[in-house]
Amino acid sequence: MLVSTQTARARVVGIHHTMNASRPTPLAQALLVALLLWPVAIRAEGKLKVQFLDVGQGDATLITCPHGTHHLLIDSGDNKYPHSQENFQRDLKAALGGTGQKLEVAIASHPHSDHIGGMEWVLTNYHVATYIDNGQPAETATWSHINTVRMKRVKSGALNYIDGKKSNLLKFKLCSAVSFTLITPAAQAKLSDTNDRSVGVRVESLGKSFLFVGDMEKAAEDAWLNKLGPDALKLARADVLKVGHHGSDTSSTEAFIHQVQPGYAFVMCGARGVSTNVGYKHPRASTLRAYANWLDAKGDVPGEKTDDVWAYNKGTENWITVPRPKRFWLTVADGIVTLETDGQTINVTTEK
Image (cartoon, rainbow, N blue to C red; front, side, top):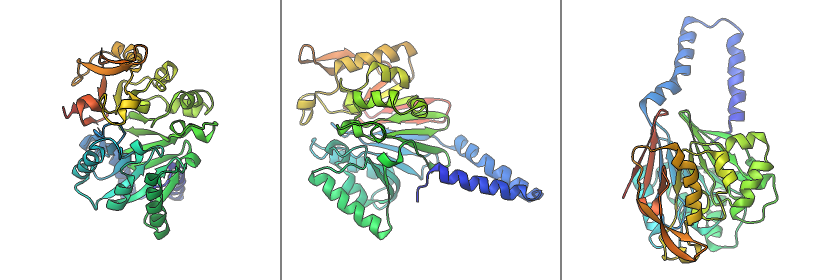
């Protein structure tokens, strides 16, 4: 069962006092040194992997610990966009080694179908240890089916459930080299829009930080910056940002981008004129320009692309091609985007 580091910290303190009761033997000293060095050994042997899956107009990100045996899933694609679930299920099975495997943590940022489209399938086909959502019910068949499976598994003792709104700013360990913190602005600010009630996730590993903000829009970003306090403000800073709300112009305010100060940014969105993106029209040209203003000054990195990408221009009400910002990737253009880091360098590879 996943426990917060507050509980883990209490256990460490208990061990510390026990060891101070008497002078440790040489064997105990050797064991202590080995335990202290264990995370360092893991850091040297593996890389953290973050996979932004290509699910069209939706989100689905899989994070794999450096030793490769612990996984965190954030969102699960759409159930309306063409091939979203087909691609999501195929790629998750490929990453985890088929169905029936253990999945330590699955997080549903908020109950919109383009984020929870595959969660019922995930809970049914994998041994999910912990499920986290924003605690908000939805009047949809998709959410109802997920909730039925979730409650049944919790009742049987097979699943640990965490309400993200009640766990704001709590930090958890995924494995020895990876921890994550839940940041939910709606826990401390009155936010009525479902997008703004998203659970944010800040992942830390090997000295690098990664921020996932679901579909938070301006109201949630403003609340995060101005109402959650200094601890939450520090947590907004990250090396890597999963851009909010598929690159919409209702998210990614200049103040929020400047607080995050990302070195890399990733957008998950659908193709222009296809299915649900006919109405959403993501990403927006103004949003890409906002990231270019920040990221282009940070210089080139290996593996980045310099092509033009499609974005919707709200002012002229048409799709245009705009220069891709540096250090910026989009699943609609790049397919599955995989980031790996050993703590020293960040490498990004694309499917397309």
